[in-house]
Image 1: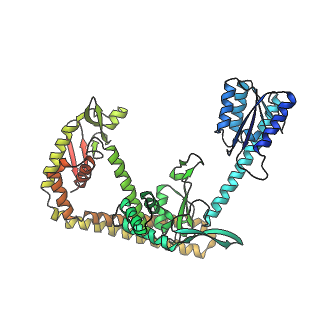
Image 2: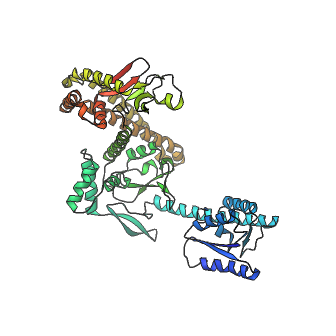
Image 3: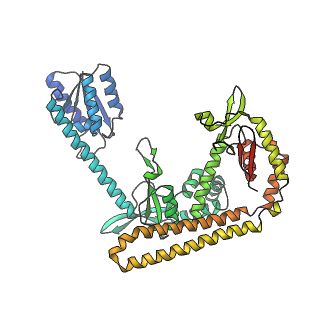
Length: 503
């Protein structure tokens, strides 16, 4: 039996239709009086072999049904040299002949196989050249800040303008939608939950706004005024920064390209493969607020994960092995729950081999926590010397920032007066700018840390009361959250328990 195989990725005027490809194979079979079976895949690329009818063809070959394969042209089978070479080996293994109807190659001779390989080299080269050209054009448009296709972010619409004599699509603000964007950020910064914001929007506008929609708005970089803070924040996370640091002047938003790849089965790419690109739009969210929002979302993500994991104990995420500093987790054996060093349990790489009975450990730690928090004077938690320490750290950083800023100003002055050495100094200018940005972030962190240490007295009084008197009424997650207000970490070794408190 002969297999006639045809493939067409998309319908175009100048492309050969599936039916035409099959007719070429049928004519050969009729001339030679051969029986045939048709296999064809429409809407599938030749870049891989993951096609339903082609898989059926392979299955039939393996089961001895097919002994010859005919196709219109080599690239209908595959545009990948590696895939096609492997196919030739596969055909040879099952004594299957291969014929290209229009190129007339015969796989039964060495010269025929060599010619097929040469043709496949050029077929793959053509495909990769087209891909590179499309990719280059795509990123060239992106770097200009133009709309490159896909879904337009909420708050903007696609508008065509003339640029370099050509019609080019750009982002234009939708005023009513932008009001909603601002509202979402404003409310989330007030410590509102994503769900409550979505619920309010649905009630206000009589239209369904989901949690997913609100989160998508909060994490979309198109809304943020991209300045040096944003540059540093995303660069440190590992994104490829497509624009120079000097372009981050707070007048543009950004789009992250390359988050996913694959048309049918979407695969999320690693951060270091994603491009952070400035776009031509009017951003509406200050960089400082945007970063606070991202950190809060990431923090909530970790807490939700911890909540899902902590199904056995309220100590989840708090306990570490004193010997190796690895986490101490819960294992269940014959219905009994134990705490054991994860490094020892998983890799046998820690000498702390003790299995702690979970209930006993929880009882001991609970009693120690209660004894400790009963003696806390919440009205005098932050001392003057601690406040002075924060101030001293801040002053040190401000001095260093001033020194770096002076160096940066000198380099910029030299570069602006001497174009010949501008490129030489450019890297140092960028590094100094990044260092200054890092110092500014450290100063903000110190201020935030000092602010966080200024205790909400009422909150602490309530927390102490609940832990002391109503702890057993709470679920595991609520217990964990309350204990974490006071407990930084708990260390276990074979003989003792050590609790580190925040205050």
